[in-house]
Image 1 (tube, helix red, strand yellow):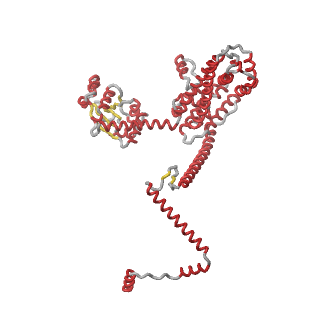
Image 2: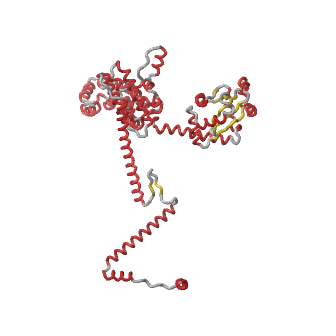
Image 3: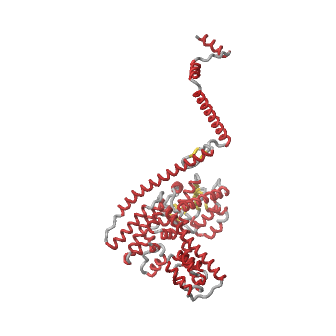
Length: 542
């Protein structure tokens, strides 16, 4: 007869429940669903076989992380091996809620796993009545354990994302794309609006942001004169263009414009110009973020394309987990599935098409260079994701390799081997990391010295640790004040001694000799009754 056990993972620990009369329960599934709500009926179907409580919150977090990733933890393996050995592994059947952990258990322990159906309903009942089925566990303690584990699990996930800081890259590249669309749309609106008054300016000035600045500068074309030529030259950066704008304004076919309309056009042009300026700032911010988070990927393929790859993958860690074949067509999923559906040619490149390497390659070599570039992008993303100290050495070496491969396709010159290049990169990266660590240590020492000086100037004497923390002498302010008083008294005594030495040095030599002779003479003994008794005792003993 098959013995069915149900595994339930709780914040307090692992629980194994034995299910009674498996065949009958399986046949009467609607009755199981009804009896789940009643604890009396549910106790007749399920009994607690074993319970393994977690030793600490850290152990609970490790176990829940392993379960979420579909990995069998050592605690779970030991728990199942000890408690399922009585029924026999061949006849024992284990019911679990997650198919991923079920497959891992089946591979690890060789158990027959069951998910869904009756097992899902039984686990629903166990979850509802868990504090009643386990002795010594109250509903309040179970809810506290769940709340604490949930907070620690969420905190660990959030910290993991914040440490990589790739969320900021994802948001900034999305905002950059949105700004490009908005600036383009608004610039076209300014062109149409101001084109009624000065239509010839559209053909002379083609750039969007430059056109908006010119529209803001010119205003009413009838008021334009040779005095405004230097200002127009600064905007257009070309004296011939500025002169042609001036000539076109004198013989323009545009309609007259009222002052209120001109004010609206100027204010809208100001907004577009400010958006264009903010876009440049955002691009600089993205460049700095990429140099911090993924310097090798940015060096290899560029800041914008690297940020697009990270954004499309979801995070730098996800991009590092992807194989090179996935990175190659990342962003061309629609074309890939359409090609698979129609049995056509699959796409050769996705987002990496915007790289300069593919644009420089010949048409017949675009697929080959995209495959090679995707391979190098995967290496660069993995180095960035899992290295402790960020450097650009690997990115520069990988970029040189892609350049050599491009020249090989064009001229036939054989490139260097990957092994030799990586050996050089590892050597150079080690030197760079050592220099970075030395600089960091020097900075730390300078900072500690600076803090010591500041504290000495303020009068406090705290103890500064190597990690930058300062601990004041004494826990309370009273102890600190007592120590300050002692220091002041010692300083006063030292000053008094110094003054005495100075006075001695100022006295004549005779007085010094007298003092020396006085110092050499023995001091007269002072007799007291105690000393007399001691002398008598000594004599008696002798």
